Length: 202
Image (cartoon, rainbow, N blue to C red; front, side, top):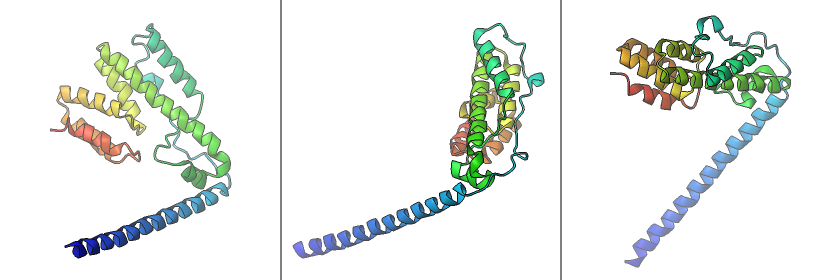
């Protein structure tokens, strides 16, 4: 009885050794590929940034007059006006290596600032929208969130809140539009957002 068990154990060890070796080879290849790509990125010359998809904040179509005396809202407005003075670009889904390859290594600090401005923008819009929603300003909340989603934000709370508003309005077509938009996001959060929206899609 011991021999079959021993033979099976030896076979298992051989298989385990093979799998570990295979995994190590795959990992080494992936690491080599990464460093080759990073080296190429670091040697990429500066390129023009004129064609980037810069985001402008449409103050005229946002509810700037609503609750404008509220301290939190004042702070949100201040942040948005500060952001409006700097370039804003959504680079969600792009690594620093990708950005250097596409736009040149000398531009990486600029591009990171553009993307940080974008992150600040969509987070501020979400907080502002929540504030107005809690105060009962549904139409104004939609204005904020619809602008935010038009920039391909991956803030899941923005999708959830807007889908909830559409659901209460019985606007199933808009919910399906949200899901379609989410499915085309480059963000790693895409699948989470789609699952959230499926809760609202009849």
